Image (cartoon, rainbow, N blue to C red):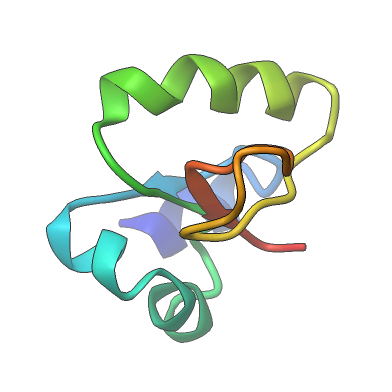
Length: 78
């Protein structure tokens, strides 16, 4: 499904998440080039921050990052 969506609308960010994705975020991104970001934690808590950052093109972060980094609750492609 992610591949179909990315091919149809390439600039649409695709976020994935769940317990498995949270625990293996870098591997999930490496294995699926169609995902742009892994939401780490509860989606309803991180989605507002993600949307704020995607609006300004500032998607940098990593699972388990320090709170001082941008978008610390996600693992995104750099």
